[in-house]
Length: 418
Image (cartoon, rainbow, N blue to C red):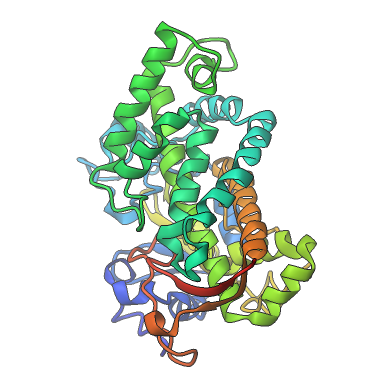
């Protein structure tokens, strides 16, 4: 792909760029680790250290626009040397303003503490035991065919049911979740999926508070803040719903990327079959090279500097994780998959700072369990030429958004292991 002309390419309205954003990132990098793009006035950060500095400075940068970036419309001008008061007055009016990634301290601190009390090491261990059984069950649905559309047949339903189990959704309701959220044989394309999750988790939490049971959902409904107070039903519902939606979507993309890479690289596929202990390093490299979350936004509360760029209060900054993870100043041979990379876990694929993805251990476990079971059940995994074209001319459709990266469909062929 040719290098994009930055004056002609509006990243935020360029679907073709999202199919392969890396040439665009390199064009940005040529201007330095931070640069103000000319179409929306967003300061784009491709440098690893520069991104880390922003992630680690919530006093200067608000997360109120984390999910919508330059499209956060305030009803008043963002003027002055400190716009913190404007942000607090109007943050609830912004799209996604009720979701944890957009919160700032001290509200974020309290809500994150509640989330940490829900996702305990004990709960994660119990959830991983469920993963092994689920992976076998999911693979059994298609393995005898010797082919599958991997995103719909495995990645989406597997990740959906894992997060359902983690949050204590009763197993008798798993099929209804698959049906409502579109995970019955294709990518999630549900109509208003958050509305379904909001309504369902509200009903669960209200029911368990009225009539507690000996189950995980009751723990979810009755967990308190660190100071002992019981959260509003809405607070718990939002945390559960948003964790469900975000965790399922990003991990499904990560698992799809790992299978694509194994299918295109038989020697790597064989290495991981023979040396399973190298699977965790492979997963880290996949998160680094093809970050499911390609970027995060921040809004400067006060005048400051990012890299060499001076910015005023009210400036939108985009932290391009997908670019920072390929910063040659931080990673040697940044575009190459290296299982022995010394700093392989120091990527920004799960964000950083106070908003580091709380589900990162879950995503790693889901991907590791999936790879183990798939390598046990499927030999000679390869890309379908009929669906995606020959090896020298592959055709894939990636998620059409600048925030996320992953396959819409991934057709695989393989030999079932007897």
